[in-house]
Length: 124
Image (cartoon, rainbow, N blue to C red):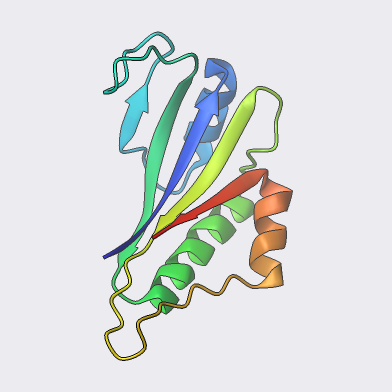
């Protein structure tokens, strides 16, 4: 299954402003000083938002685009001081015929990410 989520962390006031405008609610929220599962202490507050879970990578990208464009329409940006955002895409190699999976971000997609202040992390 292919999964896309957004990790946002930083200053609590900036996080609160961003959370208010999101098209969906965060699934996991943490506070500065909370202990992570690996035992380390978090140095920033933050949250995760699930954007899409799809078997088909084309459909996954459509849902990511729709979510980001909704943020854009609402005036939500992550390009503010003391705030960081990372689009995390984890995909499986489930195409038995070719042994590969295509994840094709367009120049417009990448430009939108840059303009919104979102970094990109892709894992397999």
